[in-house]
Length: 409
Image (tube, one colour):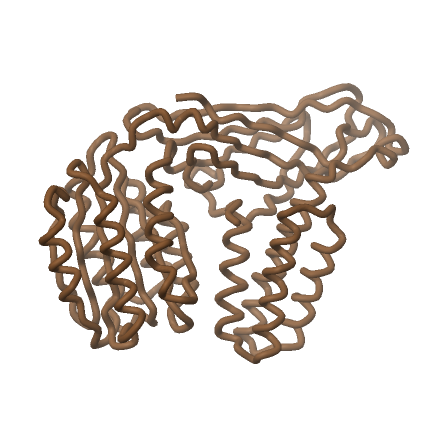
């Protein structure tokens, strides 16, 4: 495969000879589209659908339609299992190659809503169906759809996140789809992040088929799983923080989203640089990933070397507008995370302050299509706040922050 390209863009292209400075660096990881020439690896999927009573009506109708849409896109080399859960868990179809879709459609048609929500039992059952079918070169994913709060079985966010992380380490990813306003967004986001998958907030169940199609397209273009970012400051520099809200790996790195053909991941790293007497390398960045069909872990490394100027000259250097923009967008995402905390405490005054801070940050940044989309998203959050719909505001703010932090629009 053609290797991803790492580009490192500092806010100012220099270090200082006579003073320490703080410098933001935009790391961009671009995966070439040429990888699309490779055939899609076989899929090993577990569909896990919530059939609790709150799914009655449109939600269960569109969940069934989403499942049918997914089946239509699978081939005879792909495997699929179908599990449903309320207070009980039923495997409607064990993991089977999709050579004849008719029995799958029949099983989907029989799904009815009713009962409580044993989310952990549903996930565990789906996991067991696909875990025994993990093969080299096969992509394995659990697709978990729920609209409610887990009220049976294991409900701890930390425990379920750890389950998803352990499964991901064995090659079983987890994507979660939260439907409506009642599900536990922190739980589903955590399971997806720890499970090396994606998290989706679905306001309208009519969009479920499109989301399933997008998820399958993402799997079809996936070229790297369990991607990680390693940072090594050089020449006395230190990493103050990574502005993206990324989970840490067991080795001290940062977990990145999966690498997809034609996709770009952007991360902002804040460095503290000491006074540097001469031109010097200040940062080494390593991207690592597991490529389907290749046993050995892949990696690519880039280093940032900077010239040296006086502090007075450094202050006059132009700031890279792309870096300024990404810092503003990620700082706005942090405000959205704080919005969620303030909602939990019932502090609506602080919610309003954070929304205003996010808006001012984005408006002050260099304009682009990204900032326009961000402002539209903030307008929706303002409408949610004005309507008093804090439940929807919390979910939407969290989902917007999650998407920005993972370079997803």
